[in-house]
Length: 282
Length: 168
Image 1 (cartoon, one colour):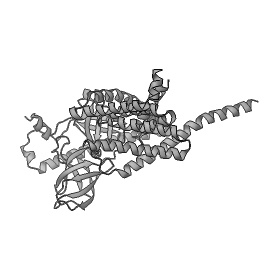
Image 2 (cartoon, each protein chain N blue to C red):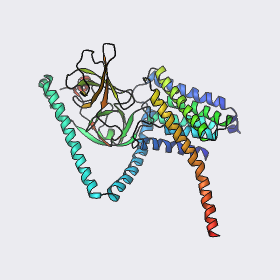
Image 3 (cartoon, each protein chain N blue to C red):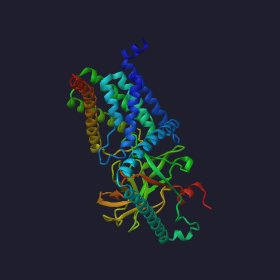
Image 4 (cartoon, rainbow over the protein chains, first blue to last red):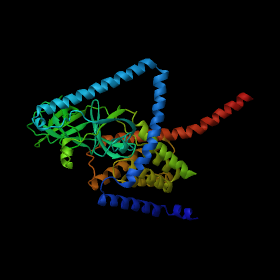
């Protein structure tokens, strides 16, 4: 009978549910500090479901590709791919090291930061909505993952950790509309900020009109944001336009193909800027 | 029983969204949860539609990095209005269904992006092309889902008839 009444009063129910949502949104907008508990708990629970589904999918894929296909060639290919990825990571580390060496500030640094402490993580799910560009990885606080840790791939920068749970973490991709990273043009050292657009392209803002930037230039992280380690590849300049303001409009093609990511590295070593901010520099 | 089926349906849409989206390349971004909400609303009316929208939106919000409630509010509105359309008009052919899914996605994105912009929480720029692509993608998936569901029982029926004929 009561259910019948509710059905007859669909309009009231609609208004009630809408009002509930507005109150919920208001509460978060006014008093939001850190990650909401509801969000963290829901993510933690669903991450386990995603992990199970991902494991099932991976098993099926492994069976299909490993056993039904050319098994030896497949495993050899996987080993070579890992070697190549390791070499690419090493190359990026060397690039970062060379970059630091060029700058005199490295001479003042006593600690060796060339060897980043990282942990490998497998991607277990994509974002729950296409409006947010996120991924879920299978490493969490139990593995030392914390919010705002950088996530990189052999090709370049992937994003940052936003919500870690015990055994999983949500990663905001660099192409998300709310993502940004301090960046520098590798060739001319022109500085700017790379921001996501929600699509598969990045935008480099705050680059002076007189700065030397040409199509094809490599954009690397500057390290000043306190999240991403310095000297890691973000992408390549695709177009440079003079927008009439004091800054150039630069479009950057990301170095990482975000649609084909399967494994990433979480950088556990804090950046110098972050250490300085936290007051942990020795 | 119906509530359990709807919860399972939304959970399946979410699982597909988070799993299959990794393997689908290209620029078409489909929101399977929204498709599920519109489908349920068209099939069951405004009350079930708004409740499904609220539930699905809140879960999706909780799994995203945004504010919890904005997606819920957008989907509640979409579920309610789509339910009303489903009861007031005959939406039984692929073309009308396509337009309902397309329009529902546009409304959802308008409310979703509008609220984020209004509250100055997130800047979406001018995502007209992305929204249009998503609307077309959702509409295509929605129409196919309807066709599949309607085709399957018929197919089973035909198979039974064929078997019984063969036995005779």
